[in-house]
Image (cartoon, rainbow, N blue to C red; front, side):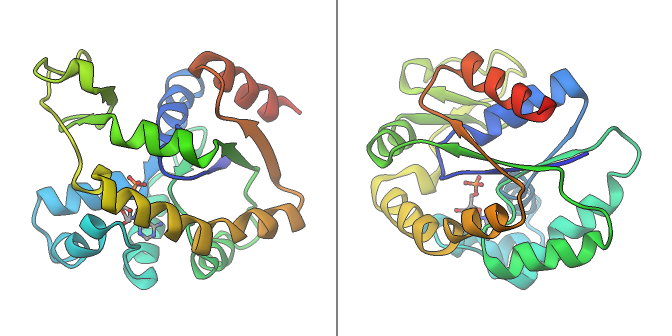
Length: 208
Ligand code: AMP
C-alpha cells in the first residue's frame, strides 16, 4: 500500500503518519525528517539543504526526488509506506508516478486546516530532537515522553519562516490537490478535529 499525506505545514501529517505506522505497520517516509537527518549527519545533501530549510523554502527538486526515491526502493518488505511531505511540487509528483511504473498510489489524503490555525500551531510547536514528535510550549524544559530526547523550536517554525512556508505551500504544493483529484485519488480529511477524530476519518478513507 502506498499512501500520500498532503497538507500544509502544521496540518498534522506527521502525527497521522506515526499513528498509521503503529496501527497498520506502514513505514513512515518523511522527506523533512530525512533532510533533518542528513543535516545532523552533516552529509553533502544536508549542507546543501540547510539554508533552504531554515528560510522555509523548498530544497531543489532533483535532490529531494533522489533522496525519497532511494528510500522508497529500500521499503519493499513491509505492508506499505505512508509518504509525508513528498511530493510537494509538480515535478516531484511526476517523478514519483514515473518511478512507480505500473504500481499506483492507493490514496492521497489531503489534511485540510485553515491558515490562521496553521500559524497558531506552528508558532507553538516544539519538536523532539530524537524522534521528531511534536509538543507545545508548555512541555519545554521536559524531555520527550517517548524517547527522552531534548525538545527545541525548529528554525523554520519561527514567524518569518512560517509565513514563507505557507506561501510556498499555496504556490507550489496546493496545485497537487487538483493533480490527484484528476487521477481520482484524492480524499479530503478535516484536520481541525482532534487527533483521534482525524485518525478515524483517515482509517475510514482507507476502507472506502
Ligand atoms: P517538513 O518537516 O515536511 O515541514 O519539511 C521541512 C523542510 O524540509 C521544508 O520546509 C523544506 O525546506 C524541506 N522539504 C521537506 N520536504 C520537501 C520536499 N518534498 N521538497 C522540497 N523541500 C522539502
